[in-house]
Amino acid sequence: MNKLLKITEIIMLVLVPAILILCAYFNIEHTAVITLVTVILSIIPFFIHFEKQKPRPRDIMPIVVLSAIAVAGRIIFAPFPNFKPVSAIVIISGVCFGKQNGFMTGAITALASNMFFGQGPWTPWQMYAWGLIGYIAGALNNCHLLDKTYKVCIYGFISALFYGFILDSWYIIGYVSPITLNTILTAYFAGLPFSLSHAVATVLFLIPIFALWRKKIDRIKIKYGIYDL
Image (cartoon, rainbow, N blue to C red):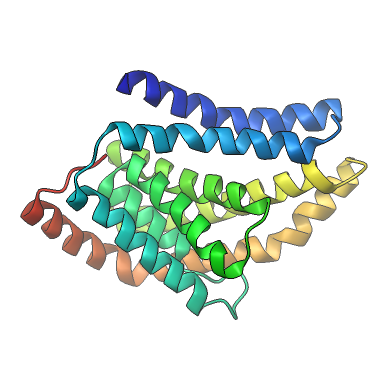
């Protein structure tokens, strides 16, 4: 069952960009609704998998604590557009606690913080995008590709740009008409300054906290027997 859920997770992660591409290529109407439903469906397997694991309270605490810190960080830095520590914290969660926890931290952070910033059709997309950042961080760490701080910072910069690309793509497919090369480029270039600010912020937050937090978290995992999910 767990293997089936893992395969389902990967399929659903790939399904979202596939639906976006198909909607754009065939110029399908009501794309905002179609893509919104798709991204919601893509998130569900991760929550099901999490529940199937039957995690102990001690295994849930890292998600709760890191999500709370990320939410607080997003609120504190609200005056600075896209200059937030959220992606950095989600990456740390994925690296330290595994891809499943990384996804859950990102998804819960988006959902919880939008109770302050406002819920809307963008919320599932933020849940998906931040969840994906944490998921990929955990997967890369399993392959020993994020064993150095500078590698994590490189991933942080790229993943923040990817986050912006996902949100901009949703906006283009759902709300830009007609979809032409000019309108696509205009939308992406309009969002680029915000994506760059997000990317720089992610690196600036990772540099001082990643190595320190990882060392502390590793000690806590050993002391309390916390498992990666």
